[in-house]
Length: 84
Image 1: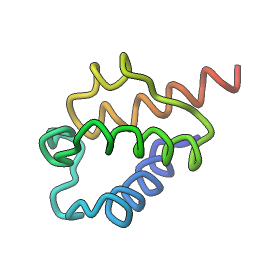
Image 2: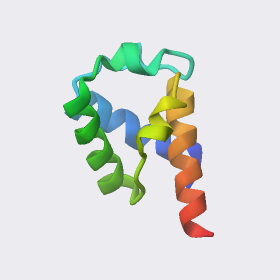
Image 3: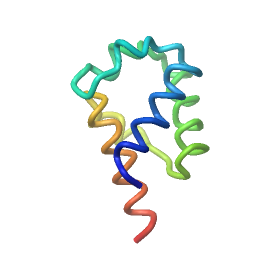
């Protein structure tokens, strides 16, 4: 899946389901600080990612996510691994 499509889908659910201000989302914005999610929100995020993309990000994946660009890349990598 192209990164542009991943960005569009991810931003849509972040804005609509997690009430993130769309103006605060950019590739180099700090992912965790911008979202301000607690541990239960991360569980919801994992479920939403899985339902939208058919892949699951785990705790180890989130530890490596600093920016939104990292987040999109992690999803793209999981999709690529799944299709191989």
